[in-house]
Length: 240
Image (cartoon, rainbow, N blue to C red):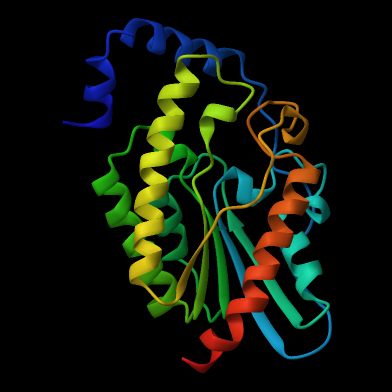
């Protein structure tokens, strides 16, 4: 049974379908911010950084790439490394679509930060399918692009997205939780993968004006958590 089949069997199915259509019709569609998607900054040991994923990886909700996830991580790591960074992310991408994009790229990179799962959740991707695509994504990063440390950002708790009404928020939040447990379990089986849960408050004040994406303050918290995890994990990963 697919995720969609399960939802259609719920007593609330008509309400959920109606709410989903209304959210899609009324959603404020923010663009991916302008600004460079690659660069070099800092001084010290070289570190090649890749940030890959969906609209949150692409920085939707920030006014410019300088205030978005990839550039903020690079700026924070620049205190300790010479960071050669690159952003490869597209609004709407599922894990499967991000994998297809990564297959068209060349490396090498040292560290990758991924942000995926919201679109898999919204499309009701099954946990088994999500696990398969995430494994393939990790394989592509580590075997194809030379990555030795993957920071896999948790699937966000969609029940706290201000743009989503109840009970749709509850249903999507529950499914996001299932997919994130898959991601966390996968990270436990792979020494090169770390599961990152950014310490973001469940507060509308950290959401962009669309009620769906992070705002610059949230991106800053997320980037700081990712940079701290990279600093803590990279020496061991570098030795592997």
